[in-house]
Amino acid sequence: MTETKRLFVENIWYAAAWEYEVQAADNKLARTICEVPLVFFARESGGYVALDNRCCHRAAPLHTGRVEGDCIRCMYHGMLYNPQGEVIEIPGQDRISKSHRVRSYPVVSKGGMIWIWMGDPTLADEQAIYDFPPLSDPDNWRGFPQESYLHYAANWLLIVDNLADFSHVAFVHTNTLGGSEAYAYSTVAENIEKLDDGFSMVRWHRGSPPPPYHKAVIPPAERDKPVDRCNTISMHLPGIFLMETLFAPAGWDAAANDRSVCREYRNCQFMTPETRHTTHFFWNYLHNTDRDKPEVTASLQNSLLEGFMEDKVIIEAQQKLLEQSPDFVPVGIKADEAFVHFRRVWAKRLQAEDAAQPLVFKDNPRRIL
Image (cartoon, rainbow, N blue to C red):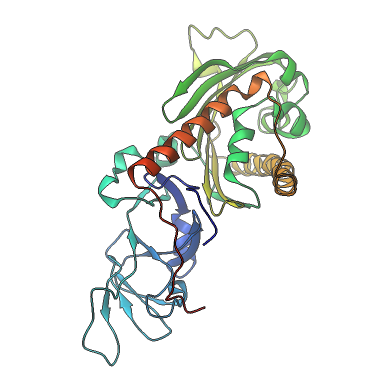
């Protein structure tokens, strides 16, 4: 093995899959997280299981197996695994040793998302999951008919960097999510709070034209009226982005906080490392006005996807250039404050896990290839 350093925090919850992804794939799904191949499957009794996606016998992929009740059977030689990863049946063999097993991982489903704990299972506290309440509140918030997923050919921290500095909205998303380059000049991040696991901030854009994606879903009479736009953002390890967006009539009295005259959105984005070079990107965008109009939901989904694809082009190009330029040293600007803090917090968590349980890298004399 050539890797000599810890790349991923293990004792933390990662967004792993939307529930429908597992259900749509014959109740099982192959997904690599933190460079670990995994299989997720739905239990007949309810809930989900995550196991290493390599049969302990000859490393056949378990995701090509068959779900049987709460178990999964490897369809190479028929070994049956229970939810704890233990082999409970070997066709033609009575004796099953304790070594006939694969690793099982704690998983929890909340708001339609399956979360996985990659580290010490005794430390897995599901109360630590950053659940996003609007995902589980259809009476007040309408999201997409089916939550969204994108795959990035880029490191997840580049996506975190992108979301930590919203001035990029003015240039990358001028004709979609931003509206004009003025956003970068007339707004700054306010109330930046450096948290133990990330950061939070607020960004106001007052007296501005409605951005194109919002303009497309409001009545024609409102489309030329200026608005006060507020984004309240929080970002948490390992890559959890939550945002409240408020559009109010220009000059709105924020202190009085009369939101009956406002339109609001809720945005969640979960970035999970697949490998050091690739990322799983999960997202939904919810609205609390015109919840009974599917055309509004569809418009928002299409607009946000268009904007995210604009990000994706730049971020994936960044990844390629950085891989080709290992000696590149970035020159910072003032707007880097939030994501620089995030990266420092991430580095501290990596160091803490190394101190508690140093990684040991060694060759495997029993490997079969």
